Amino acid sequence: MNQDSFSFTIYMIHACANTWDKKPAEVYDILQSRDCIDGFLVSNYDILHTQGTAYIVGDIQEYLKVRGIVI
Image 1 (cartoon, one colour):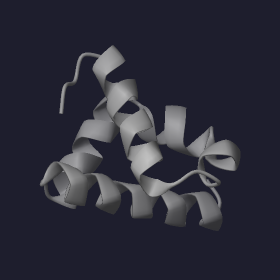
Image 2 (cartoon, one colour):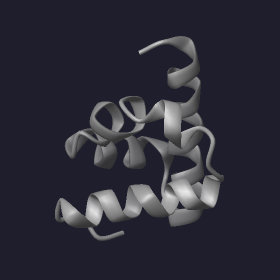
Image 3 (cartoon, rainbow, N blue to C red):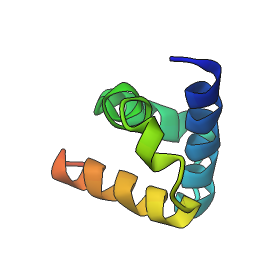
Image 4 (cartoon, rainbow, N blue to C red):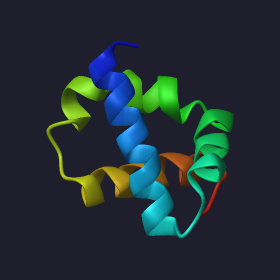
C-alpha cells in the first residue's frame, strides 16, 4: 500500500463511518474482516479514487452485502 492508497483508505473509512453512523474503528473492523481494505479498496484504488464518495460508499456496502454483512 502506498501513501495515496493509504490516505484514500482512511478517507473512505471515515466516509463510511459518517454515512453509517458508526465509529471509524467499527468500520475498520468490518472492512478488515471481509478483506474489503486490501481486496477491494487498495486493489481497485486506480479506478475508485476517480469516483465520488457517495458512489464508493455504495460500492463498499454492496461488496459487504455480497459477503454477508448488511449495513
